[in-house]
View (spheres, rainbow, N blue to C red):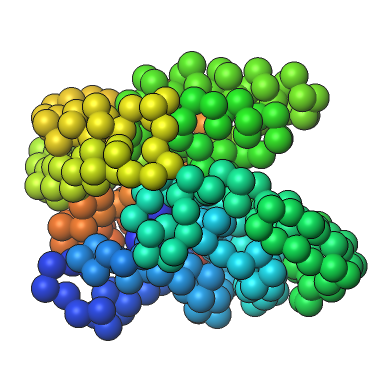
Length: 360
């Protein structure tokens, strides 16, 4: 089972942008020391009260130069906002700088606000996503290629450099709405799923549809599923429940407000039920969050919960959000990370109590 950390390069209240970068890279260094499998980078724009991570591939290049073995994942690159050739060049460059440690997650983002800032119609996001993804694959795998689409047109283009990995970095796709599970299964792509909008129980029928579509399309194996989920590990059950409470509840209210506001914006679809989901998040209580959306506890409790979820959902790995809500103090986040790597990961490895690089 793959263990990763979902990192937003948070900017905590009162923190400067420079301090946010410094503190965030300290977490990267701690993760490398603790032998975490993957550091996953978000892509967030125009959110000065939340994050400084607007350029994930630039950050990925910096991580590649300060780490040796930890993989670097993008979760996710918002493809409709990208120029396809430029993003193909940059991702291939990071793949070389990391000696093949890049995992390239892609998605559309669920929020029209960033599209508005970029001057791109969110209603076109599905079509733009499909074109950019097709161009990426062609640019990476063919010596020269041409493409004539609705939004992009290229003739006899030779991308340099080609990726370090053959044929290209692993692609994974973020899914949210029910129809995208089937589409991703048909396409044969590993998927990211999350509990931000729904509950863990809601994933079961959607994943069944994904795997049925995967098998019907003739792809080998069952299809790989990676769960992005808030995780907090502490020495005692009481600490694990209470230390992240205010931060987590702040986050779900923050998220609910933005989801509800997006329900009437361009490109929102009735199938997504944004208004009702946003209202539910703004009124959810902590006990329900603990039961249906997050994983908190002692190392043993977290390991047991993950084992059950792996069995129920068929998980290939997780992207642990260790500071959901941005309000958990830095030292506690580092401690949670170390407990996850030292005391939880070995339960899923059949190895010793410490990873190969862990240093006290």
